[in-house]
Amino acid sequence: MNDNKMNAPVLVPCPDYAPETVRPALSAAIEAAGGLDWVKPGMRVGVKLNLCIAKKPEAAATTHPVLASELTRMLKERGAEVVLGDSPGGPFVAALMHRCYEATGMKLCEEAGGELNGDFGYTEVDFPDGKSVRRFAYVDWLKNCDAVVSFCKLKSHGMMGMTAAVKNLYGVIPGTHKSEYHYRHEDPMNFADMLVDLNEYVRPRLCLCDAVEIMEGNGPTMGTPRHLGVLLAGTDPYRLDRLGAALLGLREKEIPYLEAAKRRGLLSESDPALTALAAPYALHDFVRSGATGSWFAQSEEDRGMRKLLKRSLYVMFRSRPAPDRDCIGCGKCAADCPAKAITIVKGRARIDRSACIRCFCCQEFCPTGAMKVQRSFIAKLTGR
Ligand code: SF4
Ligand code: SF4
Image (cartoon, rainbow, N blue to C red; front, top):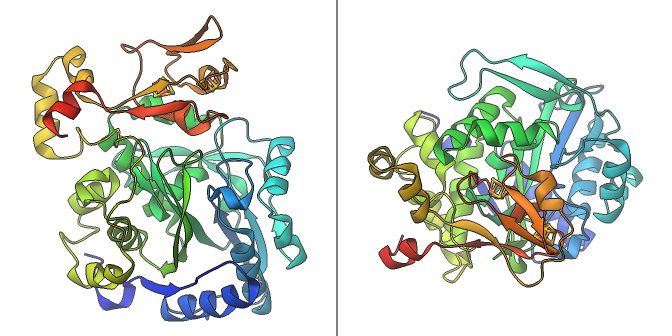
C-alpha cells in the first residue's frame, strides 16, 4: 500500500498565472512534495505536459505555459537538461506539435532554457507486470530521459470522469496508436487498468497539477474554464488525483482509474486527511462532462450487471456521444473514431450506436465542441 505521510500530495494556493505569483507557489508545492534534490547536473528530465489540443492557455485545456516555464527554470538551476512535450491524439508529427507549442504558449519554456520535444519516434516496450497492457508503444523522447515529471491539468473528462495526473500518462503512447488502445480497452475499467499500468511502468518522479484555472463541462478540450486557484504536487499520482477529485466534488466511483488503483492495492479505500485538505477549496457545483461515460461499468455490481445484460441493452444505460447543431460536418470525429462508427451524412456526423465503444475521442477532438456527452434516457431515469 502506498498510503503514508511520505507520499501525501500537497495543495498550495496560486491565485493567478503571473510569474511573480507562480514562482513562489510552485517552489512551495515542490518543496512540500519532497523537493528537487534528486535532480543531478547533466540529468535529462522529461516534463510530460498536457497539450491535448492546440488552444490558447486561456481555454484551460492545457498546462499553463508560465507554470511549465517556471518549472523549467527550477530544473535548469539544478543543472538538468529539460525536454517538454506531449503526444495528443492524431498524427504525432513535427508540424502538428509545433502548431500546438505555438498555440499553447510553450515557446516560453524555450526562453527558460528548455527544449520542446522534436523526437517523434517510439519503441515497443515490455511490461510483464501489467494487468491490462504488457507491451505498449512508448514515445522515445520520454523513454530516453533519466526521470519523468508529469505536469497535468485538472479537467472534466467524458470517459474517465476527470483527468489529472493518472490520465496524463496516456500521452506516453504516440498519437495515432491511441485509437488502437481505445479499441482494445473498450470496457472503461479495462481502460482504467491500462492507465494504471502506464503509471506503474513510467513511475513519474514528481507529479504536478495545474488547478489554477480548471475545466468543467464539455472537457477535456471544449469545456468551460473555472477558477480554482491552487497547485497540487505529489509523488503518488493516485493520491494526487484523489485530492483532485475531492476538489471537484466527484465521487471516486465516478473515476474508474481510482477504483482500479484501489483494487490493485495502490490506493487505500479512503483518505479523510485529503478530503479535509480539499474542503476549503472544494466545488459543490462542478459541471461534469455531460455525465461520465464510465459510470455504469466502474463498480463490481455494475460490471456484474453488464455480464447479465446483452450488449444491446447494456449500451442503452451508458452515456453516449451525440453531435449538436454546431456540427459543421468537418469529419474530424470520423477520422479519429477508433471503432469507425461515424460517417458524415448531409454535412453532419452520424454515429452507429451499435459500433460505438464510448471512448469519447470524438467529443475530445471535435474542433467546434459540437460533439457532446449525453446521458442515456435510462441513465437519467435511474439516476445513474
Ligand atoms: S468533429 Fe465535430 S464538427 Fe466535425 S463532424 Fe464531428 S461532430 Fe461535427
Ligand atoms: S463514436 Fe465517438 S465515442 Fe463512439 S467509438 Fe467513435 S470516437 Fe469513440
